[in-house]
Image (cartoon, rainbow, N blue to C red; front, side):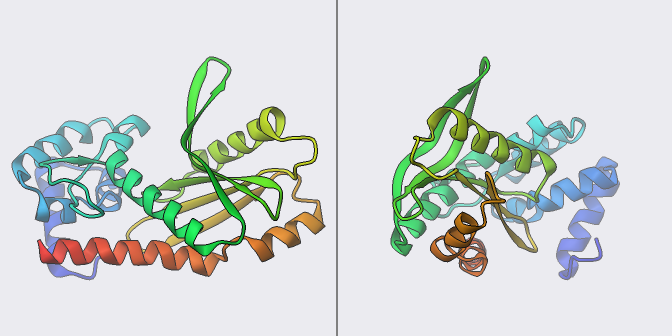
Length: 231
């Protein structure tokens, strides 16, 4: 709890730890999924508390995905419980508009693009084709801290596009992973055949910089905080 600067927030998590007997991992998960902020603006805090309590005993990836958020922003309708996929979709929508506004050759192709690998369906958050780089740009946005599976997932999508979608005269696809948590924004590029130095140099010039993308995330989080303050 040391990074929590606000006494009220720290006291909130202390009470919840005592009440629910959270493990360190569970406490970290609840902080990263903004339980304090969600509780403060929830239309039904008791329902939210029951939902958190129900999922606290099963800290697997499925439960993390289903962890509820309660922000009313980016046009989301007020709900007692807003789930993470609603929040993530609002961020993806704004990211789409942000990249198109930047220009730099982005041509929007698909949102939540469904692909089949083996017998399983997967969904890529955003797919662009970059007319200058002549390659697909695959974007994944996560509303929690980075995990190994996020990077592996994105690289799997890149390999799929390289094998199944890339045209003969295309350059290898580029992957962009954006991760946001309470304290930082992470931007990671993944490039198939990254040893092709010429292409790497071209994508550094033509794709948004880390600073631009980090500023985008920070601005979105600021809007989120402002919305919470107004509520």
